[in-house]
Image 1 (tube, one colour):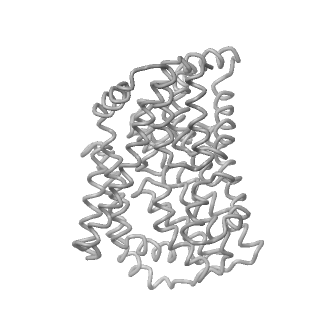
Image 2 (cartoon, rainbow, N blue to C red):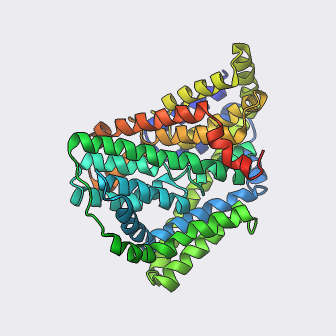
Image 3 (cartoon, helix red, strand yellow):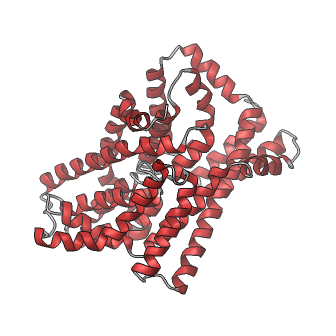
Amino acid sequence: MNLALTVLLGVIVFGAVMRLPLALVMFAGGCSYLFMSRQDIGLLVGQVMGQMTTMYVLMAIPMFILAANIMNAASISERLWALANALVGRFKGGMGHVTVLVSMIFSSMSGSAITDAAGPGLVAVRMMREIGKYPAGLACAIAAAAATIAPIIPPSIPLVIYALISGASIGALFLAGLVPGLLMGLALMLAIWLIAQRRGIPAAEHVPVSQLPRVVLRAAPSLTLPVVLLGGIWSGVFSPTESAAVAALWALILGTVLYRKIGPQTVREFLRESSGQTATTMLLIASAFILNYAITNEKLADSLVTLIASMELTPMQFMLVVNVFFLVLGCFLDGSVMMLVFVPLLMPTVRALGIDVTYFGIVVTLNFMIGLITPPYGLLLFVMSSLTRVPLMAIIREIWPFVLTLGALLMVLTWFPQIILFLPHAFGYK
C-alpha cells in the first residue's frame, strides 16, 4: 500500500473514531489522496460532476427525504400508532409489538432508519414507558431495532444508493426487500414476546373489536401512500425514481387537504430540514465518487478479486466471509462508509462468482442495518439516547437480544437466497 492510499485510509479512520461529520471526512480523505499522489485537484470536479450529472436515480434521494419529513409534519405517525395498537397491542409486551408494526408500516413510506427512529420511534419510546411500563433502556433498544426495518422494506434510500453503485434494478431491489423486511418484523416481535414473558411486561390496553372500524378508517388515508407508491412502480405507471416525487406530493396532499396539519410555517420547517439532510447526503455521495476514483486508480478491486480467487471460495463461502467482515466493521464504521467504500470493491468478485446482485444488495444492506444497533458505534443507539436523554449504556445493555435476533435472520437469508429473490423472479426480474 503506497503512502497516498495510507493517508486516505488514515483520514477516514481518524474521522470515524472522532465522530466527525462523515461527508466531510470522506471528502477530506479524497482530497488528501490527490494531494499525496501529486494529482491535479481539478479531478475533484471531474469525478463528481462527470458522474452525478448523468445519474438520474440520484433524484430519488431528496424526494424520499422530503416525503418522510412531510409525513412527520402531517401527524401520519400518530394515526399509524393508533392502528397498530388496535391490531397487536393486546399481546404480551403489547407496546413493543406496536412499535415494530408502526416501523414496518412507516418503512413503506420513509426509506430511512434515522427518520424512522426520530419520527415514530420517539413516539414509541414515550408510549412504551408511560403505557407499557417498559424500562427506559429496553424501550429505546426496541425503537432502535425496529428502525432498522426502514431501509429494507421499500422504498429505501440505501437500496437506491446500492443500485447506483452496482447497476442493479431498483424495481428488483424494492421487491426483494419486502419478504426480508416482514421477516425482520416478525423476528423482533418474537424476541419482544420472549422478553415480555420473562420480565412480566404487560399487554397494552385492549381495543374492543367494535372500535376497530373507526381506528382503521382514521388511518386509512395514510395507508394509501404505500399503495400508490409501490403500486405505481410495479404497474409501470411511473419509475422507481419518479415514485419518490409522487410520494412527496401525495404526503403533501394528505397533510394539507385532508388532515390540515400543514401550514406556511410547517412548510418552511420541513423544507429547511429536508434541504439540510439532502445537502449532507449528496456531499456524502460526491465524496464517495472521489474515493471510488482512488480505489480504481490503485487497482484495489483487481487485487481483491485476485486474492479471493486464490482462496478458491464458493459463492456461499464468499457470502459468509462478507457477512463476518461487515458485521465486525459495523461495530466501528457507519453503514454509509461501508456501502460507498467497500461495496464497489466487492462488486467485481460478486459478478465473477455469479452471485445475484439483487440478493447481494439485500444481504449487505441488512448487515449495515445490524451495524446501526451494534455497540460501540451503533449510530441508532446514539440517536435514541440523544432524543430521549436515556443513558447510552442503559440502551446498550438491552440491545443484544435484538442484535442476535437480526444476526440469526441474516444467516437464514444468506443461506436461502430464494427467500429474497422469490418476488423479483415472480415479477419477471432475472
